[in-house]
Length: 285
Ligand SMILES: Nc1ncnc2c1ncn2[C@@H]1O[C@H](COP(=O)(O)OP(=O)(O)OP(=O)(O)O)[C@@H](O)[C@H]1O
Ligand SMILES: [Mg+2]
Image 1 (cartoon, protein in one colour):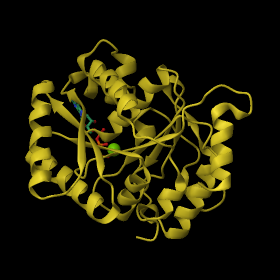
Image 2 (spheres, rainbow, N blue to C red):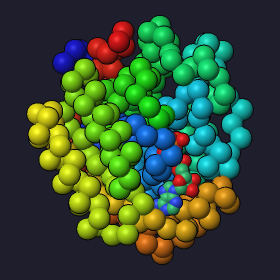
Image 3 (cartoon, rainbow, N blue to C red):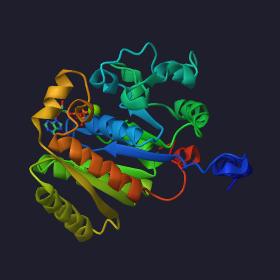
Image 4 (cartoon, helix red, strand yellow):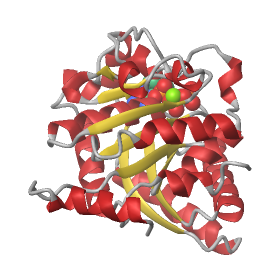
């Protein structure tokens, strides 16, 4: 590890007399196919982790069509575009979300940021490193598709959560996503989250099929089942109200699913600390 990294780790571990701090964990939530529930999952996971006392930063990595702030009923003045152009500093643009989470909003309807340049990635890295010790988790809400932006943020994270529904189109996109990430970006560990099912059994069927196909085509990846989310009217209801279902309906089945998912996440999250150096290895791709 470089000197700065060692120093950071020492400070983080209490060499400054403080208490033990969890290293920053980076989690990307992706799916390939659009509209399978990523943004709802990210926001509700962040809410639950915050409730458990974790310091969570949500990065809206759907950089041309960001909408997590809409889901939360927020109207941020600035977004990541302002950081990329150098007009604002990162700390100025973070907004407060429910439960104490912080949000880094994306620009909406700005095609320019749907494919960020290597220079812009470097600017992001430099700015975001400032926040390294301020958070326990950084969760990336990844856009649909397998664009260079998607690959960049997924390969940056320690853990990639792949969201799939039982629909064949979603299954196929989830598989394609893992194939490209493992083959071209050396991501080998994935956490599967199956959304819109009736029960855990249905999620396990999807999980087993995915593991089987990945084996058959020799992807050499490890997939863990992170959990399932039931199809639940509380999701649509809360989306319309621009509130989080786990906040508005904590007793709903789907909110229990989220609590189970974040519990598993805390248990299964990869070793080590999230580092932007890892990101830059792939920045030029
Ligand atoms: N478990 C669920 N039960 C009922 N409806 C759901 C569930 N999960 C997602 N939805 C519905 O799907 C819609 C899309 O969800 P969301 O915006 O989170 O998907 P996304 O993957 O982020 O989409 P995009 O790819 O466009 O970013 C929600 O507005 C909600 O109506
Ligand atoms: Mg989304």
